[in-house]
Image (cartoon, rainbow, N blue to C red; front, side):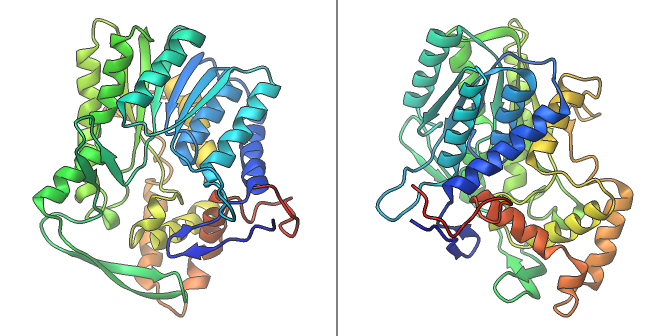
Amino acid sequence: MVVEPKVKGFICTTAHPVGCEKNVLNQIEYVKKMGKIDGAKRVLVIGASTGYGLASRITAAFGMGAATIGVLFDKEASGKRTATPGLYNTRAFDDAARKEGLYTKSINGDAFSVEIKDQVISTIKEDLGKVDMVVYSLASPRRTTPDGTAYVSSLKTIGEPFTQKNWNLKDDTIGEATIPCATDEEIEATVKVMGGEDWMDWIDALVDADAIEKDAITIAYSYIGPKLTYPIYHEGTIGMAKKHLSESADAITKKQENMGIKAYVSVNKALVTQASSAIPVVPLYLSVLYKVMKEKGIHEGCVEQMYRLFKDKVFGTGGVGEDGMFHVDDWEMREDVQTEVMDIWEKLCSDNLLEMADTEGYWNDFYQMFGFKVEGVDYSLDVEV
């Protein structure tokens, strides 16, 4: 069938299999062009089908020559409904990896569950013996814990509501969005879903099963951002979850001291992802940031970020910052970049939005997440979904 994008709010309900494949192949080509990384050899990526997780897996496989196991939670096509983009991405990755003689195994299921942990560990033991790197890149709105309790995360502030400029994506006008305060229960639920508890569970399970090497490294991803978005990210419910994630890194490293396993958080750049698209204020900040960073020649997408993280920071001499975290948000947070972003932000209104912000770049990245607007794809053709 001919697949077209169907956008509802901040989500696209269709995905294009050929566009997704081309997107993956473009990222693979970038990594191969950039050259080899002397890094890990057997890598588990939890949350491997889109965004930073997918880019991490591509970098591990095609940059480091690593065997990879990816955990994803994506839906198959059904009738006239396409599969979710992560499924098409993963199939494209698996095909490309096998063609290059690289070991790859993808496991589709709820990474929060004991069953999927057991299945992954069984696969590691049978096929690889042990992994020497674990990337934790889950982005989920809800989690059911092993005892059956369901938690749903909230994108809310703490203390008082937050009102800021907001881009109305439907008509390209600038208005305001007010983000309400979270209850104590909502804060706790967000930490349960987006914090580090499940990350710690994964490492415990791998250690208990003797499925992870001594001196292995594990990395989870976070975002801090500018003061403009502090009430949402840094000081809101997400911020509390990310604080817990950072504390979990320290807890894992301390608990696994005898094994020499080290856990880190990498603070990444703001990019258009399925998660960030859902957060008020953020799409407008992203479109301004894109304009400034592109003009300075320092804009990066997911795969550029992950290649630089692994090459320069994790397995290079860049190392961690003073806070003990890797920082590939360093270019975003440069003083000259943030000064220009805030200068534009103050002047932004409905009349000058298209001129002062890279709205086209935002939408291109948004559609490309679902396999649309990818150069070299003929979208008028029938495709097998």
